Amino acid sequence: MTPAADSCENKPYYLPLLLIISAASHFPFVLTGFGELDAARIGVSVIDMVKHGPEGAFINFYFSDVIPLYILYLKSFMKLTGQHFEYLPVIMNYTNAVFGTLTVIPAYILIKRLFKSPPVSFCSVLALIFAPAFYQSTTTGFPHLISFFFLLTSFCFYLTALDHDQIASSYLRMALACLFLTVSLLFKLDYILGAGTFISLLYIRKIKDRNKIISAFVIIILSGLFALIFRHLIIGPTGGVTSSSTGLSEWYNFFFPGPSSLFSLHYLERQVKPVIYAAGMITFFLGIAAFSYQLMKRNSDAIIFILLWTVLPTITWMILNGNNARHNMLSILPFLVIIVMTFFEKAPRYVLILTVMLILGNYFITSPSSSILRPSGNLIKSHALLKNRMIELHSKAGEIANIDEKQIAVLGYFSNPFTIYEILRTAPSYEAVKTGREDYKIKAGNKEYVILYIDRNASEAAIESMVGRYNLQDHVLVSVSHDLTFLQKRGLKVKNIGLIKVDL
Image (cartoon, rainbow, N blue to C red; front, side, top):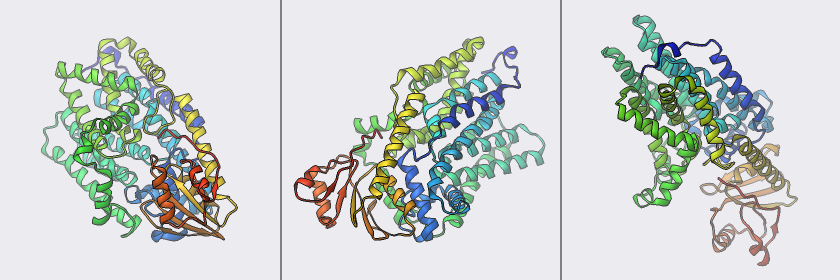
């Protein structure tokens, strides 16, 4: 697809304007607490690593070996602040706001250089800024967004290497592409799923040079090896769930469903929804329509671009149990590009208006939501819901941490990481022992906390059985996810602090 020459003039204000729009739409809305439970898990792991080193009980509360550079960054920041752990969620969230804004730069450069159309690049990145999964990631803390920035930067350097005939200059850019891909993987190792894009760049540029073709595979392989080596150096030999055969086996059994689950309609619906909601309802279906149109036109550049960029990550996350919108953030940009390219081909003078209509369509078609699985294009109201949920989770967790009892048992699931964070950050010292997959015993001062993971749909019989199994008859029982009134009626000590309804 070759845009009309008279419509492809590069405006010097395109990139600065995108940066201003991105910063203005993200920074005022950055949260001050953890926006999701996985971020809280990371925060807990960081505190425990700073306090107890690589042998801490919470070292693998989240998968520290797939985000080693992020863990190192947060640990270093905490040591610089004198272990003021109350700053941890703010640091995580504002780091994402910074990288969310900076991502505009490689995204704009990559699309402009690849398809030689500044208007298409401008409108694609404008739509990306307001894509639900991307926007939500810029106000909460998680390393996917940071990894995305370095991945796009790697693509930019590799594309410029392909466009350079001078051997020394080309190899230097390839080395930088390898460096930035390695950094991307060290922030989130599963972004190796985006490596197929290197092959699509070769195809779109019609590269025949054998050395340049081989270079794509060399960069991918070397970056993967470097990431594994540096991961080991950063976290050490015992610091990861997926770093050993035993840990990897447990991870596989938990996240890969059996054939009966994989092909069930319920599982498929649950896994596909985050893909749709990540990009926005209108974006997803328009993307399919635009792809079908380019397929009928046999526009091989656009077809290869979207297939090699999106297919592997999208299918992988649709299979893995626990798919959510931020997992699919990697696939959003090519969807937007192919939509905007189609807009530009059919109505070049109105491409900006059509892009704004796309953003507004996502805004109005879905009701606001605080869910990380299904974020809404209705960004303003959704953010307010997310902020209220975050405040409530932190508030209830603080209330549990401050209960004036010696033995406290916390029964829950989504709220547990917040509770543990509040306990650890406020305790001068503590000792923790892992007693189950997500079950822990914490001694802080003269208090003992037993933290138990209870499935959100657990029956009263299952909860009562767990209470008996852990001998919690002398503990004060508390939960913000399950009604424990039935235990109180049986004569057990229950502290009622109110339930939180969370749309995961």
